Structure formats: C-alpha cells, structure tokens
Length: 490
Ligand code: HEM
Image 1: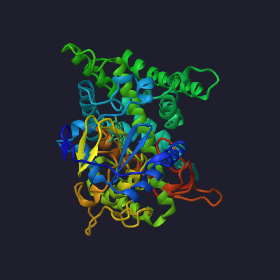
Image 2: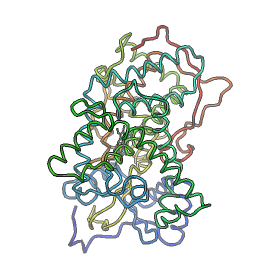
Image 3: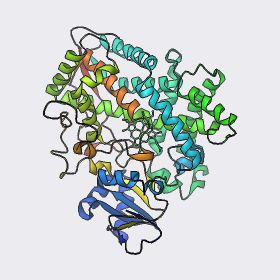
Image 4: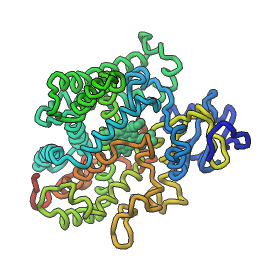
C-alpha cells in the first residue's frame, strides 16, 4: 500500500476501453443494471477494474476484503472516503451541509460523529424505544389477526415507516397518516428520479431542471415538494415543540447537539440545513432498505415452507409466549443467520454508495488515481462462485457453525460480506436496522404462518430479474396468512 507522491512504478488498473465500453456503460446505466455489466468486467479483468467514462475514471472493487482494505486501512482511509459530487447532494440535500453525500470535511466528521452516537443509542440501548416499537408492531399484529390474506409489502412498508417515524420523532402516538406519507413520498419520488436522469443528465446540465415542458423539471419539482413536505412534517413541527432536556427522538437530540456546538462557537457544523439534510438522509437510508429486506425474507419463507417452520420452531422454543425483545437475539442464531442471508441474497444496493479518491494511491501494485470514483461491487462480491457455495440459493444456515451457532463477525465467511460498507463511511444505522428487522421478523413468525394463495402469483424471487430502482427488491406481493394457535400481543 502506498500513497502519493512517488507512485511512478504503479501499473494501470486493467479494464475495457474505447467506444464499445462507453456505449455499453451508457446503455446499462439507462437500464439501471450497470451492476451486471460491472460483473462481466469483474469476471474478465479481476478484483480491480477501471473504466474511463468521458474522462471520469471509475474503479470497481470486486472483492469484499479488498474493499475493506481500501476503505479502512490506516494509510489509505483519509484518501478513499470522499464522495463524488452529485446532483442529488448539491441541488436536493442542502449541498455540502449534508453528511452522507458530501466529502469528508471537518464539519462532515462532526455531523457523522454526533449522528452515529444518536442512532447507535437507539439501535442497542433504549428500552423505551423498544417499547414504542413493540406497540407499533402490536398494531400490525392486531390488524393482521382477522385476515385470511394480506398485502404483505404494503403492511411492511407501513410498519417500517412507523419505525422511522419513531426514530425521528419518538412520539409514536402523534404519528399521523400525513407524516407517514411525507416519509414515503420523499423516498419513492427520489427513487423515481434516481440514478440515470439525475446524475447522467442533470449533473452536467443542471439548468434543465428549470426548462418547462421537460420531464426533468416535473420530476425535480415533485422531489423538492416531497423534500419540503418532509421537512415541514418533521423538522419544523418538532422544532416548534422541542424542549431541551426532554428529547423525544433523533431530531430533538440533534437540536440539543446543535445548541451545544453553538455555545462552543461552532454555528456551521450542525446548522438548521444540516439537521434537515440528516432528516432527508435518514429517510433515504432507512426506509426502503429495511422494508425490502423483510419483504425478501418473507417471500423466500413462503416459497420454502420448511425453512419457515424451522424459523418458527426457534421462535417457539426461545421466545414462546413472551413478548419478543432484543435480549432474545443472542439465543436465536438461526433467525440472525436468516436475516444476514436475506441481506446477502438481496444485495439491495449493488454498489453501496460511491466513494471518491482524494489523492493518487497504490493498491497491490496498481494506481488508483486522484478523483477516481470507487464502487464496491457488492452485487458480485456476494455471489462470487469462488467464495460462495450455490450463491443464487437462499441458505439461511450459511452463517452457522457445526454446532448451529452464528459465525463471529470476523469469520472468513462473514468477511466475504460487505452489506453495510466498511470504515469511516460505513452505515451508521447497521445496529438499528438489524435489531428492528429482528423484532419485526420474530413478531410476525411468532404469530402467523404465511403461504402462497392459489389464485395470486408471487413475484419472481430471483434478484437477477427484479426491477431496478435505487434499492433493488422483489415486486409487491399478497399472500395468505394463518394465525398460529395463540396470538402473542406485546
Ligand atoms: C437493511 C438496512 C440497511 C442497509 C443494507 C444499509 C446499507 C448501507 C450502505 C451500504 C451504506 C454505504 C456505505 C459506504 O459508503 O461504504 C450506508 C450508508 C448510510 N446508512 Fe445505511 N443501511 C441500512 C439501514 C440504515 C438505517 C436504518 C439508517 C439510519 C437510521 C442508515 C443510515 C445510513 C447513513 C446516514 C449512511 C451514510 C453514511 C456516511 O456517508 O457517512 N442506514 N448504508
């Protein structure tokens, strides 16, 4: 590993060149399936592949361990964790005042540290939050109790939105239909404009967003309206009723951190626009990712009833009639392994989020140039046939040892995963996402059996055939539902 300036001997990273490469890159970006093209290149050229698209170098990292070294090694991490400039960041999420889509400046680091602390706290520690969350799941369980069939995807979307609402506002009882709609609209409108229109067309030609009659203007206007509705529903509403010392959720905690920073003379790092940006970023990062993973898992369990029964028997023997709680987690290796496997199987964000390189660096004798965009190809890393047995098959016990215990996070098999990224840009919501998915899954499986309906076709479960959006997922589905003998209401 070497950093600039003396990288004279480093070789150029191999990869496709010329007009053919540009043509296939544009075609695959338009169809939102550039992960498939990148996978062909990975198989042809190896763990590092470079393409040059209109003078922009893009480096694909095709091995999870290598990605971990590049993003995390002490001699490289200050160089490899910037974000490329994007239209989304500049014109939608409050420019460089945001956290997830902006480069690693001192102010970004302050935001990330504060945000990480607050979200981690809700992921692992807050009993009160667990109670609020279980009350919301209780609502879902009651609603589903009297049904024979259920629009599962819709119910899970609603349940996940209520989790995001509780995280942001804390006050579950005040959560209205309008608030949930504001969360959902922002994420789904963004997903419509993502990625090709926004980054390939609007980034180089941003004035197109103002040209009447063009679809870009209509979509951009809709996105800004959705963003402002979200900011009104969560930032302005909560700020008006905020009381220091009586923080209700993440927004209140950020307002408290803001006033502390201001007292110390820092009025920039967490200004109002930054708190609004963090609200937008939390919505983008936490809703569809979580809902789609639970949908994928339950769809797979419907198609494999024997796996559903195995999961249910672990729930029955560990939780029994009790209310599910995070304290049950460590005794439920099969459930944990199933959730990790659903995350691998879906690989909802094929390239994680893009990184960019601040300076020339050398990796394994190759030169990664300053300004290059770095994309970890999780889509390929999670299906490499030399690392995964039957990579396209859902195997919930993949991450269990011979005694049925969950493999440790540093086990070689788990190191082949890069679901939440790695290092200083890794997902700060991982603990939160995994603990909430655990509670949703065990509550559903404790109370219901899910099955395919004779007259209703289920969506294709093969991720290669899923419709591409910002987050990849199976289509919406309806299924049959049978209460288990007793309903266990939390
Ligand atoms: C199944 C659920 C989730 C998955 C698979 C997921 C995955 C990811 C990935 C792959 C990244 C990019 C890592 C990188 O750039 O190297 C990321 C970043 C991020 N995630 Fe998540 N995430 C999930 C849930 C959440 C939740 C629940 C939250 C918030 C409560 C969250 C907040 C964020 C934020 C703010 C970032 C940007 C971090 C930064 O740039 O510094 N995510 N996530």
